[in-house]
Length: 307
Ligand SMILES: Cc1cc2nc3c(=O)[nH]c(=O)nc-3n(C[C@H](O)[C@H](O)[C@H](O)COP(=O)(O)OP(=O)(O)OC[C@H]3O[C@@H](n4cnc5c(N)ncnc54)[C@H](O)[C@@H]3O)c2cc1C
Image (cartoon, rainbow, N blue to C red; front, top):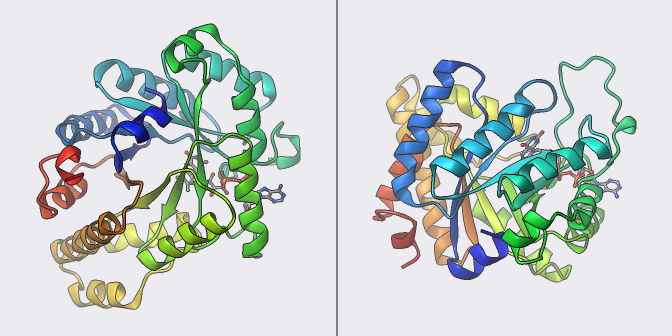
């Protein structure tokens, strides 16, 4: 289903993000998690794209398998990193033939293990260039599935700002360029203070950005996980009240999890009260935290959360 139709049919949306598993064991864990999350009836699920190397094909495999086995729209992430136009063309054709009709188009994280990587050699320098290319992509099979609209396109947004552009006014101009290039929705980086999201949403409105903005939520489930999040999200702020509670929990791993899930639950409750267009859960291929948040909110599934 085209993402525009999903937002029109059932807003707010509730979606789950997975990453492609690298080993048979992690694959089993992922498919268990997907099975456990399916009853929550997500609006769509998305699958991340590696910074380079062999996991990239795994994204395609997981997207196609999830599309076949689950009755849910599956959105692959795609990045500019290490790609020429012909690669992207081939990837889009493969997705189109497998009835995938939405893409999350990203600049991409720089590959950490690829010695000599030079961004200047990539065909697309910014996500906006990739959005433009995807928008121009034509395929008859895709046309049939998308009612002639081509791929539905999502882009990334950063409520607390992206570290690559310290000038927040310029950054908003760049975001507007992605939207003008043809993006249908924005999915945000994770954040822990909803005020950052509300302010970002308002700044988008002031910049003339009027597409749905989906809030990225990642519950803290361990102290180690929190440190990793701080590393990967490059700049996310951890509010003092949250840190104080995590500190109080100390070595009690269950208590840390309870604190993290409680915080994320309150974020979701508040976002729903403030008419968020959608909530995207970074699941880390686990089902427990997301299911617990739905339960805490008193909801059996996504439809119940919309009431
Ligand atoms: C929801 C979400 C999902 C993600 N999934 C993945 C994934 O699957 N795989 C992965 O590798 N990474 C992923 N990322 C991380 C993301 O790729 C990186 O954070 C990346 O650095 C920024 O991506 P972008 O799409 O915003 O890039 P861009 O829009 O290209 O922006 C990158 C930087 O360049 C700046 N910029 C934009 N346009 C211009 C211009 N014209 N001139 C100069 N500077 C400009 C921006 O302000 C920003 O600082 C994800 C991030 C989010 C929020």
